[in-house]
Every structure is written in C-alpha cells, then in structure tokens.
Amino acid sequence: MKLYRIMALIERDMRKFFRSPALMMSSMIFPLVQLVVLGYAFGGKIHGAVIAVVDQDQTVESRRIREMFNGISAGPETFRAVNYDSVPRALDDLRAGFLRGVVEIPHDFSRRYYQHDRPRIAFTEDNTDQFVSSSLLERIQQMADVLNAPSVEPRLAGQVVVNVVEIYPYIEYIKYLLAGSIAMAIFIVAMIGGGITFIDDKARGLHEGYLVTPIQKSEMVLGLIGSGALKGLMAGLVLTIVGGLLAGIPRLWDPVRLFYLSVVVLIASVAMLSFMFLVMVRVDDPLVPRAIFGVLNTLLFFPSGAVYPVEAFPTWLRWLSNVDPFTYTVHALRNLTLKNTGIEGIYRDVLILAGFSVVMISCSIALFKRQI
Image (tube, rainbow, N blue to C red; front, side, top):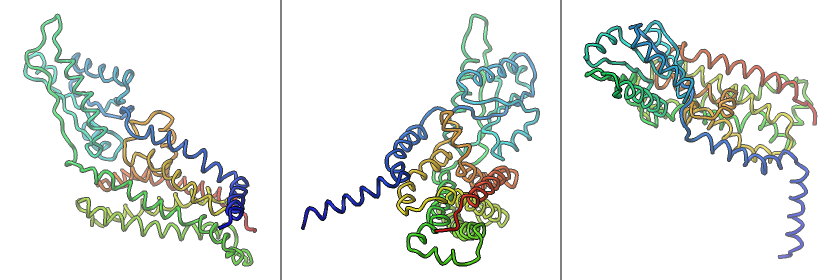
C-alpha cells in the first residue's frame, strides 16, 4: 500500500468537489436548513386554526361568549373564529376540511343561564387531527371556566357546560400518518425518475442517442415526466390500498372513493415529478441529486403537516408550507381516507397541484438544453 496513491485519490476527489458549487452547497449549507426546519416542524402551540361560531341565541350572554372568541383570535391566536348563520353549513365546511371545529350557542342558552339550568355550548371537533382538536378543546374549556368563575356579583347556580361532539370515530395515529406515507411513496418515485433519469443517462453517455433524433425538448421533458408519473401512480395506489388495509380504513373499496384517490395520486405525481425535473434541469453532476435527496425530503415532507399540524408552525414555516406540493397532497388524501369527502374536499388541492405542475413543466421546458 502506497501512501502517495491514497493522497492522489484524495486530491482528485477534492478537486471535483471544489469544481461543483452545487455539490458544495448541498453538503454544507443544506444540513443547516434541515436543522432549522426540523427544529420548528415538531412541537409548538396551535395558531390560527379556523373554527365556526353559530350563535342561535343572539342575546347579551351569547354576545359575551362571541367577544371571548374574538379576544382569543386577537390575543393568543389559538384559533380564528368565523361567524356562521347555519349549523348544517358549518358542519359541511367542517367535513370538507375548511374548518377545524364548530361551536354552537343554542337558542335556549340565555334562558337556561338565567334559570340556573346548566346552560350548554356544543363544540363539534374534527378529531382526525388529535393535535389540533385537543388544543381547541382545551382553550374552549378554559373559556367555560372563566364563565363559571365566581365574581362579586351573584353568579348562576348551574354552571356552563361544554358538550363535545366528535364528528368522526376515534382516529388512530397510523391512519393519520397514512396520507403522508402515500405522498412520500410518490416523492420517492419522483426522486428516481424524470430529470434524474436523464442525468444518469448523461453520465453513461446514453443521452447522445436522444440528441441525434429529431425529438423536441418539450417532448423529451413531457415523456420523462409522464413515465415517472405513471410509476408514481402505481406506487401511490399500492401504498393506498395496502396501507389502508393495514390501518383499517373503512369502505376503502368504494369505487367513487378509489377514483378520487387515483386522481389525487396522479396529479400529485405529475406535480412532484415536474418539480424534481425543474430542480435537476441544469444539473450535470450525478452526485448532486444524491446529495440533496435527504434535504429535499425534509423541506417538503415535514412542513406539509404530514406528521404535525401546520397550525403549530411559525409564520415563516407556514409560508414554506403554502408553496409545498406535499401540503396539498396530504390534505386531499387525508380528506379522502379519514373523512371520505367527495369532490368538495379535494377540488382546491387538485387545482393548486395542477397549476403548480403547469408552471414547473413550462419552466423545465424553457431551461432544458437539448445538447451535450
């Protein structure tokens, strides 16, 4: 064993490293980004969860409760209260995923209040997310404790009671994580397909076979993304069915539900493949994709709300969540697997993912170089 030969290999690899700024960035800067994102994506207090308040009493006492909700919206900001005039409409929005809970002040609240007949407030929670529902229930219970607290003036003998209604049966955490696992399966396919396939072809010299043909660069981009999307569809559906059976998702074989799941998985596959293609469109070094896979996984998976609710994130991380295709994929899949909603629960996510795909594909075609 010769030391100078070992040093020569070390020198060669170091020269290659310093000649690739993208690889240097991936290995030095991205781990710091990963540390920050992971540090803030777990834990934290719930902020900005949207709940509906339906005041059917419209009296001084019910107005006092609404003012307490507004005070929390302006102070601790645990939730943002939105006034609704109809309980059925509020429950429809709750099932569609637009709300996190519904608070109903019944029409006999003030009468029972003054008659000392245990006045009640109904709280219907979206218990598919135990993190958010438990935080909201804790805050509402604190409000009830304030109402029941003694004061100088005589208080009512029958104290205010909060009736909690869980709109769905108990949700095990494995069911909660299923949507994120499906999105992760799609992303894994995206990481090994699309633009990364072309990078490997260039590394092996196989891409020259494309370049001698009259194929256009738009056709090449769409062909690589299309093939990867089909792989993502197969992987996503397999994990949906197998994971759904393991988690015990009821009515998994409903044809309409499977159709909606297929639509979400397909459009999510196109969105993630087109995003990865844009990231890799000008990359030539095959080591760069391997270096950034873990970081991209962190930047896309954890801020999506797959393992912890978005409402607990700080403001800057919520902005990252808003542009993350994982967020809309997880939201749509969770609505379908846990809430069994129809098109009303997924159409916004599908439209956002479709628009995201169009932008990513257009940018990829514009930046793609059909040359060596």
